[in-house]
Length: 326
Ligand SMILES: NC(=O)c1ccc[n+]([C@@H]2O[C@H](COP(=O)([O-])OP(=O)(O)OC[C@H]3O[C@@H](n4cnc5c(N)ncnc54)[C@H](OP(=O)(O)O)[C@@H]3O)[C@@H](O)[C@H]2O)c1
Image 1 (cartoon, rainbow, N blue to C red):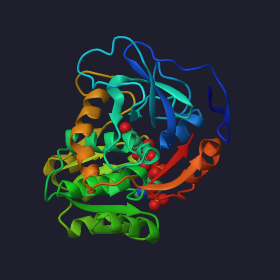
Image 2: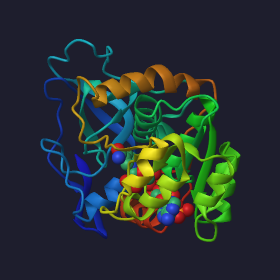
Image 3: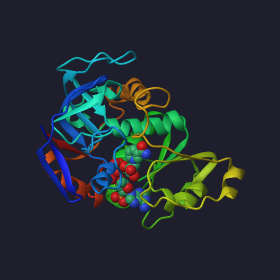
């Protein structure tokens, strides 16, 4: 089969690699499209190694057709069959013609969604649902601050939060991106380059939940932007790994600071990828089927152009997701 091999961060080459096959508990997917994530860019640069046992080929989500079913799928997994169209959350291996994936991480294609577009859903849907709902219990009437509102994660989070009846504030770096966020339902839009998100959030009594992709550089200001009993959920470290946590700001407002990652979770069991995939299939797929949430695909490119796709993501030259077609 062919797959993308990262010869260097800028040299992503579509070439022959050993065939993938379905091991015990896995299905093999013939890939139609692969979603691009910031983690893929980091992995190509050697800064985000795959978890133990995962493929060293880049790519954390795909859509496609099941071509083989491995032995011992076990209980508690949906019934999959050869020829079925699906999408999947991966620990790696997605930028390829075929990928083997634990059956627990396979999802059906939501009703009404094209097979290519579905490649841009598993990572954002699982990240957003696990953090906003399973972790922070975002509720109707609460205020969410989403940093990077026009990102892949942000465009999905805005829609899910609105579908839950929450209000949404976002930050982004340009008027065009803020307009995208407004179109998706964001009410408070803040250009982080020339506006102070803390002051803007304080006008509204503070955020109940912040979904943060910046980490260190926003840590202190995020605490100031939270309402009493607010929760800061950190999922990215684009602004650095180490910040100073002012505990004096936590106690009076009873704040919680939480960090999570999706990729390194176990396949099944408590707090696993399998548990999240099941919750997303049950709760988010109906929101997509009835049109409350849509995949937001900003660009489609052939997989041979994976390198250009990564450059586009790093340059901030895309709203929503990029999908690579195979
Ligand atoms: N922990 C997890 O399990 C998990 C899972 C998935 C994703 N993530 C993380 O979530 C983040 C988004 O992922 P993605 O794939 O959606 O990436 P993406 O589409 O490349 O988005 C990155 C975003 O960062 C925004 N940004 C840059 N500087 C900013 C600043 N100072 N303030 C606010 N926003 C800023 C950019 O917005 P502008 O262009 O407007 O500047 C851009 O929209 C990444 O950090 C990724 O690592 C974590």
